[in-house]
Image 1 (cartoon, rainbow, N blue to C red):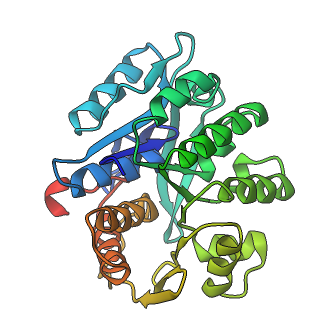
Image 2: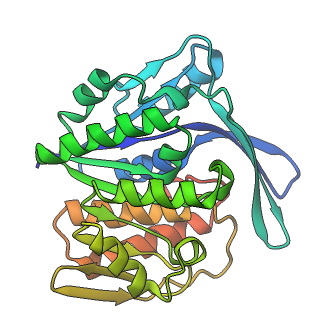
Image 3: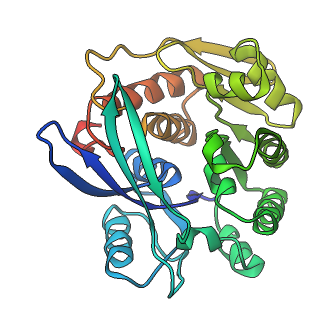
Length: 301
């Protein structure tokens, strides 16, 4: 496998409320968060890239510059002249985070409009990562295009990784969501679901049931995240459960699952076993939980 990690999805403008009452602007998005952490964790022999669409406005330019400065390859970030990035605000309420989004005209919604461009981008990637949010922002036709390109990349030898990242507000109804996520899982090697979300949508009794369901769809490595409960990794012939790392005070849960995914995948790509990878994933997620916004300072990792 080529030493190249490519994430596909939506990068957004993030406005995060601080304890001082001030709002801070950053750039984030579930797959971008994972790419950012993967770049911080993988050695210099690895290339980490991002595939999306941005506009030609000042915020798109600033976002592109941020991604590039983070060491992430931006060659697969296209430009849509009459669109801009999506925007979201995070605030804390009743001990939990709340989000408000503006993304109807986001350029990222067009990231899969051209199959030839997708094939060219995916042709050099050893591992390709996408999420349920990547699927949800696309039109049904573009969803089909993306999954076909991923299936072809898998046939060429790429490892396809999927976080279902279930967000009901992005879908027309639960039936559409279940069908799309199930269809996507069928083209994947590694799936990284979150048990609470999966239980609500699919009725899974426990994390083992979630792992078995995705294994039945063809995934050969499934990691079930479960908040502060142990995470479970399962593969043909084996399984392991690793407790979460205690967090003294949760500052902001934004991006914790994304950082967990990056911690796990980076460890596996560097040759570590499943238990070691889960331990690394919990450590990175705990660090993310202790900071505002989706991206913890790199010197804290």
